[in-house]
Image (cartoon, rainbow, N blue to C red; front, side, top):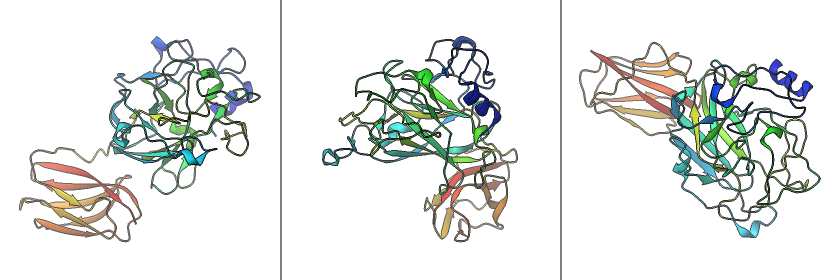
Length: 343
């Protein structure tokens, strides 16, 4: 945990600048504010909400995989949530969603990895229809698609009475849980809070996982924050649209190797299978290709083929699973493609 979060917990309050002045690359310092409050709802002083049309977003998730949870985890006979197409989790936030259901999960990937830059690094969008009807999710990240690390979260919502399916809760009682803000306003996350986590490269995040918070206060079904507090949010929601409704994940700081010029001008380039397991096949349809390289997200060259034929085979069975960049060198340009290796 970073020093800022430790101070926040110790002081038990949060303060920020006004929404209109908020710069996601200049996170608000903690100062005097109402005790027990974290960032306020979108549009209010102290909010960290970022609108979907903000020009700070460099890119959006390009692929989404969903494991649906139950409509009501306490009554499995109702089956899983079914609302929305999985592809709704990709692209810009537009209030088109896929519902995860109780304890459901979504894993999102990107054309370029997310990097730990100044301030917040990415934001998650849900479709809460007002500032006080909030469905929440844990946020985890991974560099390799195997080892995931969860952002430390805090919920100060009361737990004496269950928040019903159409009841409300206060955004200022929630920290580091997706779904804190209403539709088209993203909840931002800062990878700096996870620096030092063994097995995680915070400068090369290839996967973001969202895990629905089961808002029940019953211990058999409850979800807990990083400090053992039960997280109380609207529950049960026994509908096809149960649980966290994923709209989008927007990237603020993205990894971009300085040595690679991405230029995809009218060249036939087929790369398969994706994901690759033992072998990667590259078909270029061109005899002018000078070199093919497989590069990891740290910029290290793992495979190099030269001279190149119109069909090239790369042996990847010894390369760890994860996201990589394939570069094809032509006389006047370098073409890149994202490659996923999965064993």
